[in-house]
Image (cartoon, rainbow, N blue to C red; front, top):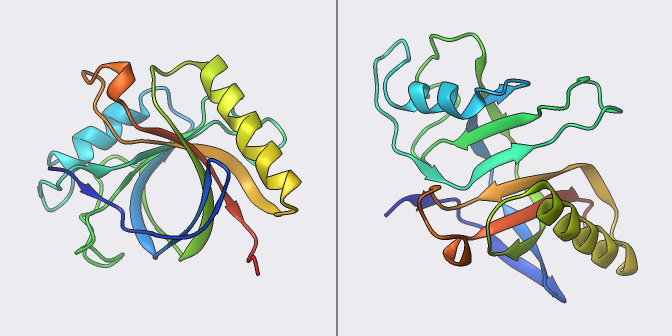
Length: 171
């Protein structure tokens, strides 16, 4: 069984969950069509310590909009490090495209759905998420990202996918 980030659901708005996430450590790759492979090689020992890092879920991916500071259409991908790692104890990547980062505790609004992955499916779920948040007068921060929980060999109807976005504190 793969370790999954622990979070607390603090509110439900229709199909959207507002979740409180703890601080996490991620290995991430920005702007590379080979991001998954680079991250996979990192966790399987392509790091200074030659350490193998357990796979966790979800895999976080973001399509970066052209208006963001990084001018890219390929986006970013991150693997969440197991909870026993800190910024200081995470193995040091050998590939300079792999970066280690600490993401502070934050509130995330997430919309869960199953099925295969496609740009059209992502866009539909993203619109549903943003519409629900707008109707509830909840302000967002940053860009929408995806959280994928299953390996590619799992049939689409059994997959857990989510679109999510950081939100402002709610009352």
